[in-house]
Length: 208
Length: 103
Image (cartoon, rainbow over all chains, first blue to last red; front, top):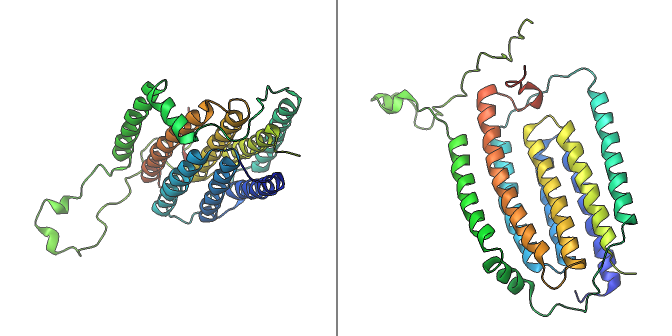
């Protein structure tokens, strides 16, 4: 990294504040669309942090995959389950939140103590690395990480097929097979949500 | 003053703890998936920090980060498909209502 140290410190501070504030917003906002857009900001700031860590390829991959693909997927899911519902209030919800906050603060304190007190065997960097990080990563991918690299492609194919099978509506309307297409308007939605299963009915509280 | 490894590790620890908090307390199923993405990004940040400061010559941490990103993308696709399927089944996204496996 051939930026000046002051520039690095200032950009690290700005990016970390953006990241922590965005992550808190993702968790704490009540409107989930705001959360999705703040998640986009969190991913972008993490890409900036990767640039500070001399990783240009992974920063570009982060922007492409997370901001471009995962976040759009999450927005699509939000729009598909777009239902304004007020969640049923459960008793003693604040106990759970306070307990979780205490546990998370304790976990952060533990991790912070570990990070500060451990003597890391830091290698003294001699300026810029000899070759570009893309060349090094490509050498790793096609020599010693070849099997995981190929398995990752098979894994992505499996995930794609599995997601399609899970999210597909597995019943077709009967009108399509018969000749009643002229009666229904052309763009009406033929499918409905499936009926609730009998075990643990939501609408009628079961008697225990 | 120079950027240290500890700064990045503390930042990743904070992000991970926020992700754990959101994972446990949120009731919307999509927000749970977003919290899991936050936690995976915290792990990625750890890997990148170690790769830059402890292994700057052969950067294996970046290779691991690419694999983690791959798994995270697949997880997001399958998880959101599961959320859609269970929304069609139960007609809600409230995590408290998903009690099919409760005994």
